[in-house]
Image (tube, rainbow, N blue to C red; front, side):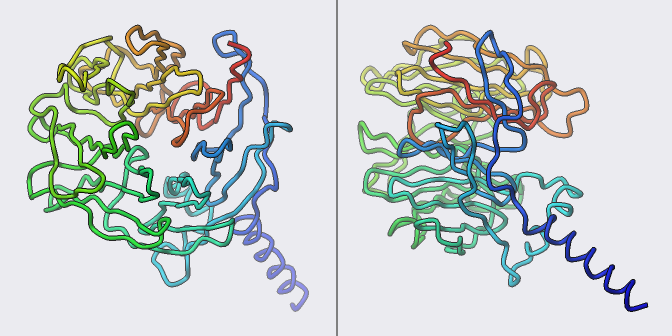
Length: 377
């Protein structure tokens, strides 16, 4: 009897180790594919974090990985533990998260200082110098990946994203002292917006841009001066044209793709000198995420939600070198058995020297991170 009990205890401990504790020390490319006749390293079950200070960061479940360009592998750096004192403690188990469809637990952001913030569960976790993550703020609602930014003084902003119809106020918070101390930055009045899609810092003008949705009267693009949280200045409101998620910002323009599954979507730009909006390019469906590359080109991704305004069932990545002429760079069909939106995402942070994409609920490269070397373009 004792023998069988001993075996059972060992089996349970082994399962807990593999299910809760273990993460591989490194993750290397599973295979090399040809994407648009370009070599791509493919990493399964890795999700993009930030490209910051010449380093690409990614996550797998609760683990943080750092890209080693010389070896082509992601090396384990840190991990998050949901504390026993919170309701999320059981989410430390990969099996339970998978069972309940919680395969991605949060979003990782790297600040200019190197400090990392992990938005996961109902909290914001902070790690400095790769020390263990600890809670610095409790959150009432979620965020979109595009809903966090940092200004040139090291202040961090995030906007609340919720689908709760009873939510009365939608807030923007500011984190000071390198993401350590948090306070309310601005509160939208009841009924003004449904939620915040994007928060973006404009280093050219020292502005914090906000995008909101979803109805025509809730769809707004506007900004705050970074040193003034009293006035939200809108440049557009009142139609799906102004329903955006991520912005691209340069010296003269801001660019966005419409985020509307119900009507035909377009890429727009707004001339900040002339105060004029210009329609540039029709796209397949709602646009979510954007990124800049270090060669000056810009990327925009589209999503399959299943709305009547979408042209097809494909996720697309659009690219431009001059901001005016856009072309489809990659197009991938949605998975037929998808259980959510088909999404392409990109890292946050600085312009990278290579293209990095991640796909969810697509027919090819499902839940995979792809790194395309710029020298192959």
